[in-house]
Length: 429
Image 1 (spheres, rainbow, N blue to C red):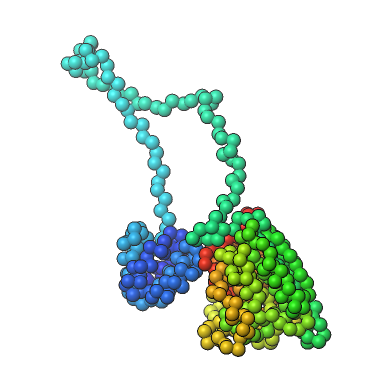
Image 2 (cartoon, one colour):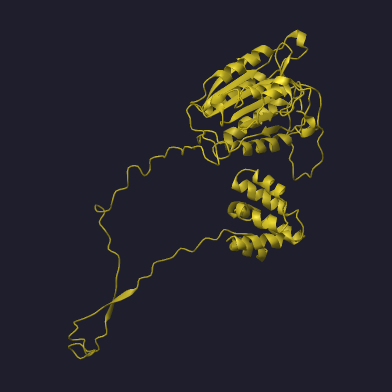
């Protein structure tokens, strides 16, 4: 794309994000060869309309010299000609506000006696042209004015979200169960260090999910078999009255063979439970009362010493912030690509794994406290307006910009098999 066209898009980005309906122009841009179907699907996965519009404008700048005029044509074809004209003018888009219309007093003729005015003369012989008398609205006395409705200023209750094609039903009270497993102190035989600061992370997430109307259950220092027992008990519960289920695990982690969800978490005695097994407990086959309902897993799994030194970016793109001191780093999950499928995976895991619809697994990387702190803050600030996937993208972006001791980087990740948008119960504070 030509530099001048890029500049026009950048100058108008804010109002394009506000006004553009990207769903109207996808077909036109696809037909013109500006975007591929994969690119459009990726833009749609950005989340809200504003997020899609922002990503579309950003991607347009990379699509060659035909992209800008093709975009203008698509805008005109879909009833957004005003945006096309403003972009074509080269100036920044401004939100047009119609000038306030002032009422005009129009005099109406008041005819006289028709007999006297038959010849256009009055009884004095003068011209009997109709006299123009301006009409003005009648002012009602104060005691006649209708009083405002008593319900007018009463705060309206938050709109409940019912299950729909676009979003999950999330209005049960409580919304669901949130199980937090917090492993802090490990047996000496496990050769795993104490996870200092994990109690602070646990307290933050406990309060956060309580504020989102979840019933929170906290379990501390569980062995491998105890982790499985708690998950099995959670799966055997009747979740019919709930809309969602959340599992948070704070522990040491390690790599593990898998065919969908990578990694594993240690019990305090040393042995580990694969994340794939953890998610299987709550899938639609093993927990029927959670079928078609979102199952969310937030896993902070410390372990290993792999560190990512990142790569250089322009100073105006990233503003590093000082990082804290971490005792241990978090394990980076293995790739979830198809080449990681292995016939050595545990038989029971593969046999009981249907398509994991309505499951989202969010992993932390190192150091875990940054992930939890950022996740907690983003949920607090954005849960009122944003869906979960959008908020996790915000978490990924912010955490990736935090420098560990000025050098190392971390990047959270997630495996998303949700079919709809998920909005938590949250009220404005």
